[in-house]
Image 1: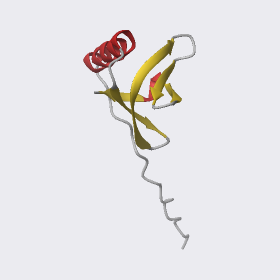
Image 2: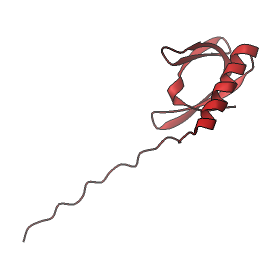
Image 3: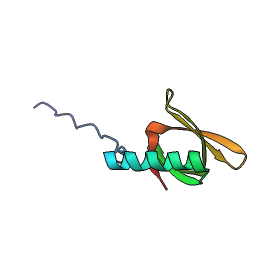
Image 4: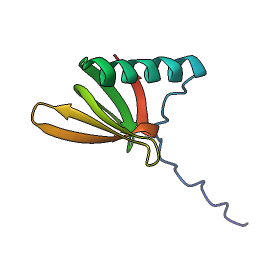
Length: 88
C-alpha cells in the first residue's frame, strides 16, 4: 500500500478590493479638488494585506512615478497611487 501525501495547507491571503472605472474617476476628481482648492481628504490605501487611512491635503502629484504627496499637519507623506482604494 502506498501512502498518499496530504495536501499542503495554504494560507488565506487578503485580496484587495476590485475597483470599477467609475471608482477610478471619482478618486481622480477628489484628488484634483484637494490639490486645486486645498480641501482636506481621507485617502484609504490597501497595501501589504491591510488597509491604512491618511487624512490631509494633496500637495503634489507625480504622474511619472505614480506618487501622491499629502500634507498631514507638518509632515509630508508619499502614497503610491496604485494602492489607493478610496478618497473621501
